Length: 329
Image (cartoon, rainbow, N blue to C red; front, side):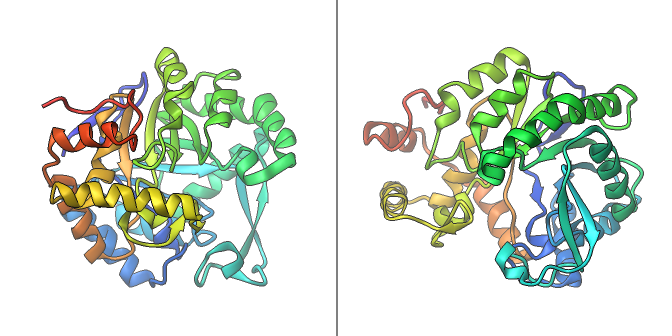
């Protein structure tokens, strides 16, 4: 599988990785054995880059990921900013989780919180190495007005912790794992980041990072990992978008994109999966299959030829930003 370099580091990761949210039961109903089988299938298919977080099943995803990667060659991204404390939440489905572990989240983006989270992650994983450390879900999308306080904690302490871990060689790269452009722009003003894992913002449905974020990242030497290439499922025929039911205008655009794909006799999902990687700033794309069957479908989509004329048609119909890099032939 093709690899690309993460930012200015020497670390290279697969252009197609495995997103770990469903492995923890986030918007997915699968048990430990099914999650382990999914990871095993990804490894057998040649995937070597995996992403997880404490948030995914309140530790469930980390536990199975660590078990399946232990003793093997891997590249792993994990996240900090949330500490897990004993005590189950009253309604897991309010968080979109099926059968999470009996913990709840405390947010802490300060120096001590980041250091504690990194150590806790390693303990749950049962691994001695995390390659890419990401501050998770900081930003107004997650925290609203409270983000002013959280971002100040990151600026005044959390970034220093992450930079110290990178400088000491405990992690190879640092960044954010978020769903919005603006907090990435803000972060570029407080530190030297290797990569932003940006979910749902650079897809066939939306290319807003081309306005300011991608040019700023290019100047800073910061690369992008694209999470959520299917925009929570709307680009593979589901009704979810941005982790909720899609509004009518999004449904209509998805239908227009699907009609364009049908005209070229290609699966829309194949184009959605491949599109982000047409931009050189994107290092990897990480869908989150819910079972081994979905993984097989993703691997097939990743190899499906998409003609240059399709991309040209999207631009001519106003369905794709003119600035988005696409093949010309």
